[in-house]
Image (cartoon, rainbow over all chains, first blue to last red; front, side, top):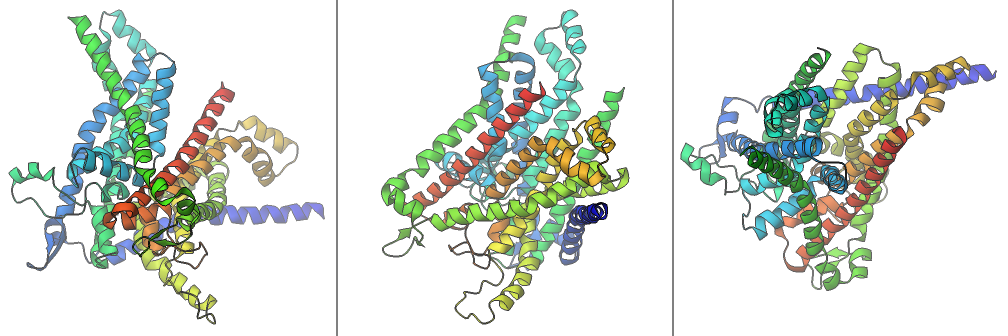
Amino acid sequence: MLKSKKRVSDIIMYILIYVCSFLSVLLLAGIIIYVFVRGISSVNWSFLTTVTSKLKGTVGIAGNIVNTLYIIIITMLIATPVGVGTAIYLNEYAKAGKLVTIIEYATETLAGIPSIIFGLFGMVFFGETLHMGYSLLTGSLTLILMVLPLITRNTQEALKTVPDSYRNGAIGLGAGKWHMIRTILIPSSMSGIITGVILAVGRIVGESAALLFTAGSAKALPKTLAALFPKLFQSGGTLTIQLYLSATSEGDFGTAFGIALVLLAIVFLINAGTKMLAGKFDVNRLK
Amino acid sequence: MNKVIEKTAKMIFLICAITGVLAVVSITVYMFIKGTPALKNVGIAELLFGNVWKPTANPPAYGIAYIILSSIIGTFMAVLIGIPVGLLTAVFLSELAGKKIATIVGGAVELLAAIPSVIYGLIGMMVLNPFLYKLELLVFKNKPEHQFTGGANLLAAIIVLAIMILPTVISISTSSLKLVPGNIKNASFALGATKIQTIFKVIIPAAKSGILTGVVLGIGRALGEAMAINMVAGGSVNVPLPFNSVRFLTTQLVSEMSYSSGVHRQVLFTVGLVLFIFIMIINFILLKMRRRDVMTNA
């Protein structure tokens, strides 16, 4: 009697476990299919290469794509060296102590701050105190703070896997510490650094709350290459911001789903990229 | 010459490392500088415990009690749904699934984590809200005094949040379940326990601290989410009941920051400060938990 009762409860738990596990797969499949079906009719060449204009009768997101790329490039150009530098300092220079604890706490804390708070801070600090207003630069500076922990942590993980014999070997051969870092450590932890960079790019592509009050929502396309530079100081909405506006104030769901499809494609490509790198990383370690 | 290079290199790395610390300090300082004037201008009690939000009326009312309450209840309910589902999925991934199925389910979880929040919001608007509207019509059929929301309500926000915290809960729980040593499991099997008994009586308790970390991270994620729930939760400040249109701390900022000025704007910064304090408490708990884990492992 007791035994059969237990089996029934076991079966119920098994069913619950299976149902919950397949929920994730089902959700993902549902999201992909729904976005694809609703979005595919909006996505075509002119959607990707023109700017929405009533005058010309075009619907397109080229301006938002340029803004997104712009923000990714500026953010990563600054965040990558700073994040890698932080990791190198923590792993190679610092001795365990108060300063290291503070820096590590700060990194953890930054990683836990929600993007809307970064947006608020970016708006008042870069936008108002430093008078940069709503601009791509304000947005990028805000996002640097947001992605720093990602790059620092991934670089730290990679640095930890570099055997000490490499370091001692280089130093023993008479190399200076900086020379050793530049020629031995950075190259051998490259895949970790790149993983961090790709993850950070993914985070930027999907970010919206931190950009709404910092980079703004303009979608104009610069007319010439020379016009790209002043754009840094002008407002510019990324793909996610345009999706948000299309779905809410503009009520243009065709565009919203079109952008959603483009975003999903980018995000999945990025995921595949990190997977590939992780695989490579493992093989290197086995050797 | 070499010495100069070495010293400069070290200095530069140190400056990089200090950047993060400076960022945290200035964010904290700014949040307090911007968030406190309203406490003085409106009055702490009226602001934090007042439940009327009419920033543009004359005289204006700036009570954010319902906003704080919505955030707490919304987060709590989302976690209450997300954690059992996430934990059971983690159990599947670490204990039951074959390699192939684990790759598929694990991959799906990873991709769910990568989907931008505006897409969750968009799908919530198009799928969840109409469905909840039908439910609302059914539930409040004979109650004309109910203010109909078209399905954009607290319930919608809870469901979207529960889905959005799933990947966090699953990935942290799975890795801590995997760390449970095999000999504990074998001891349990040897005593005649079934697999399910072993999982729930032995493995999960052994992985408790890791799972708790996942829970706290999930709470932080739900509390800080802004755009997705702004799109599905409706837009009025209300008592947080399932079928009421509600505002959260985060969505209050998203929807009113752009047009606010004067005291209204100051109050919005106080809303930001309240959110920031909640998040800092959660961060602090996480740091303590991690530290304790490191101590016990060493």
